[in-house]
Image 1 (cartoon, rainbow, N blue to C red):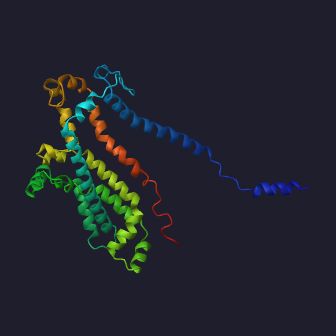
Image 2: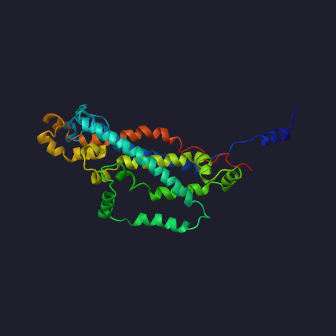
Image 3: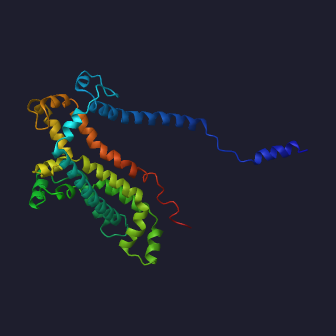
Length: 309
């Protein structure tokens, strides 16, 4: 028969999981409540906008539309999407966003990688120049004169080049590159890689999460941007969808009287109250479609197992 002391020693030798303390359980509860509130505050307005875009004008005017559409109709969507100019503007937005995002990510990555080298001569001055532009700009008129004198008006470069490098994104990426182990680049140099080879074959593969984040930040920024195109584009066939929808929204009142070339007067009257909601939905949808493919990089392990010993 096993003695009582032996049974006690056996129970003591069994591994036991760490039991959460009372304070940790309280933290989990508070954290769940706060995050749930953040989700509700974020999702509720968007669902309301979607419901308004699908509702009848009479229910919207009466203030009876909340999360569920009332008097379901697609008149506003039909009015907007039946105009060929809308699809031309959408195509322009896609082209501007892709080109501008590609240029911005390449320039930001190269500049941030250079600034991350502590042995670089003049590094402090280069960082100072970048930070200076966060607080001081040339102004609207000098920028317009510069873009015009360079012959960039009515081209994609008027949108892509003046805002190619966001200093905040640059500093974030610089800090990320500085966190990478120096041993990685030293090993690459021993293997015969030059600076460009190290960046392309060692650093960037380990920076997928950061590059994906920069792509998302820049893509959202350029997709939602309208003022640069409004300022530098004179031709209707070059305007992005944000400017098109802005003009449609601004002219909704006049359109109720004249039709505005976008449909019958009755259609415009019915869609006048929903045009703002349709504008938001059509602008947000492409970003919502792209985000799930980039989101997985945000939680990936970047440096897991990169350095041994």
